[in-house]
Image (cartoon, rainbow, N blue to C red):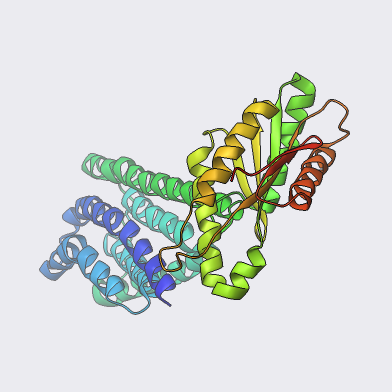
Length: 352
């Protein structure tokens, strides 16, 4: 409900300024057409209220409503009704009528598509009927030079205002799209790349290494005995440990390195343009830093990492072969006592 109300308020705010501009300069077109017709004084008062007061009343009605979007659509239908009223009141002066009704029709289509277009058209016909009942039916086919000049602001400034609103909306939609795209590629707990996004980048990196003959190292990182941490201290503490590792990855890796959560307590990294020796040094620093982590409420908790590394080799048939080599290295690190780094058939023991 709150989300829908927020969207409705945003919709009302986007329409507020264009309505002020549109009704303000639209009144010039209507006034120029009404001037030679000698209409009653109350018609001029109604025109002034429509131009100067109604935009603010409409905004208050929508923003204070429990359903702002629905209220604003009702406001737009009332705009259409008034548009039909003014078209008939100025005796369907060709230029002024087309200017006013076409701009309102553009609003209805932009805001509600065909459905609001049809509803708006019916509201305009209702406005015409009201005008004919009050002022009588008449037609004035002539257009004066004054009326031409009076319509120019509506034909130029109002489309510009609507265009700016559409541009701002397009920018927001683009930002939302980028945000959603980032969320779809990000692990919600750690903020790192998720499994699918990281494997996509692994494939790209593999192709670059094979085509450009560049170096890169893949690392698989496992938190030792993580299940015991969850069993002994609870999943909340376990999640804290996972977030701590993700934080240390962000701190210790370069900007162009790619870190992700492979699944559960297993993490993964791609280190482009980094030979095995340098990658080992980076991972050793990570292992030592993470091993020094102490939970503020559980000082007795100890954590360690097992890490498997593999550099991209020309004989690898695909990215899966490269990843499999790192996985075998990780298995070797676990088999040889954990809390260590293993790569290419050798392992680096932990430092006591």
